[in-house]
Image 1 (tube, rainbow, N blue to C red):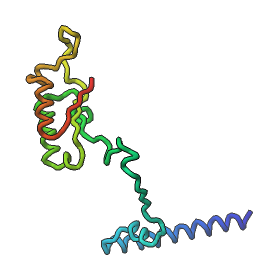
Image 2 (tube, helix red, strand yellow; image 1 turned 180 degrees about the vertical axis):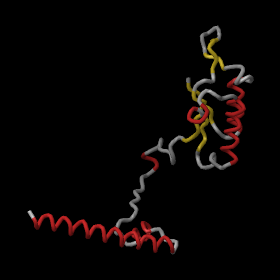
Image 3 (cartoon, rainbow, N blue to C red; image 1 turned 120 degrees about the horizontal axis):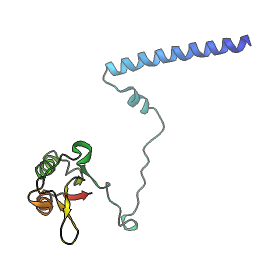
Image 4 (cartoon, rainbow, N blue to C red; image 1 turned 45 degrees about the vertical axis):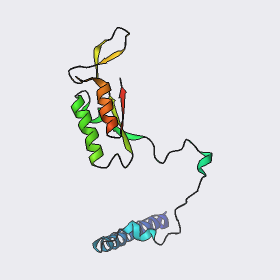
Length: 150
């Protein structure tokens, strides 16, 4: 049993020494403006793998998944047409639309509790006094699409 205990202690001591050396090495690299992981990657044999696929075989493929913004995570039920439109304008002015974030999703709490004579949901006229159709037109004029959830 004693050799096993000594071996474990020796292994633990060696691991501690390596960790200290790696830490010092990392600090030196960071001090010189080099990321330690990037420095190690230069010497690894792994390279990026790219496979070219002919587009005609995948006509529905897009460069990026549909991306956008949803009102729920930030505002929950405290939304109105000004907030939604201002968010669309902010996304456009910050170049998010150019990056592919083209969807604005009103996620719940946009409708009133009453329905029209055909039984369809109606917008909350206090929060959306001009209606959803006008808001959709405004957002589409910014080069984006409007979605709603209820």
